[in-house]
Image 1 (tube, rainbow, N blue to C red):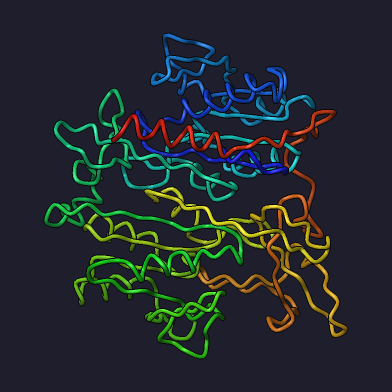
Image 2: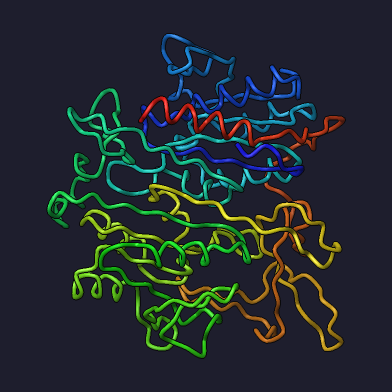
Length: 444
């Protein structure tokens, strides 16, 4: 959990069952907060789904690697969690978010953050059918930071990284792509080609967070046959269809997918990969391509290394097309941040994880776009009714505290705001360093 920011925050900890360390992450966070005297035990609500409970340790979250437990309450509905939250709870941790099948789940955890809290959720992102596990991917798309762990495959003699869960085993073990049975999907696609192991890395963040820049640097260093793809919905570098241009001015060769002009879909990427025998692909603005999740799923199972970059939420704080499924499918999520430069609040400079749309009037003054304004979305080609022209729109990167949406309706849940408890601003760099050391001891 990135704990050195001074604002409400949500961290998502994902990975396969048994070995990714989600429960250990909660135990570690809880211990650091309490032992460091940053908050008292009464200021932390630790909760779990009953299916996440360890049978031998009822009422506790157990970390096997650290032989530690923390007390936890069991809640299987969002209403039960909401009723348990008090004004003294500055931190809420929930283990087993993938078991919650209520479609309001991502909204609930986001509203917990909006009520002024630090929120940590852990969950398994994928079912054995290669589809997202309930709403875990949606919660991940709404989160501000992520940890995706890839333990060693549990198959005998295999040392590959695992990112999927074998649910057929009573113990629910972690598997790599080579030993993972995707059921009917794998039968449709075929076995992993030539024993190659695919991989999917996703760069996420708000606008101006240099996601494309980081991916472009990766593309310039990759060895083997590779290609970069961009979509004609993107305005950046529109004068040059043969290049990807980042906000920093970095330019690399790229192929255009004409989703807007010709109705092309991500199937074009799949065709190019096979025609040219590519071993790696780089995809900019992943939310813009129709059918992209299914294409990436096939490419990874066929041994291709896939890299993509995208924002995950719109200016309305809604999840963009493709992104919930892509967040669930990812083997690794790389968070990129900008600094809050929301001109409505004189650019506070805190860490930005949201995107603010501004409507620029003829006198150059700016007002925040209201809920329900025109939303340009590539995935399902939605254009809402509205009079706002694209030329009159600008964007700011903004922190959660300064993200403004006029017309935002009443929250779905009556969550009491934090009262009398200041969220501490502690140095999370030491915490992240501890995670890195723990990772090294376990897997290298």
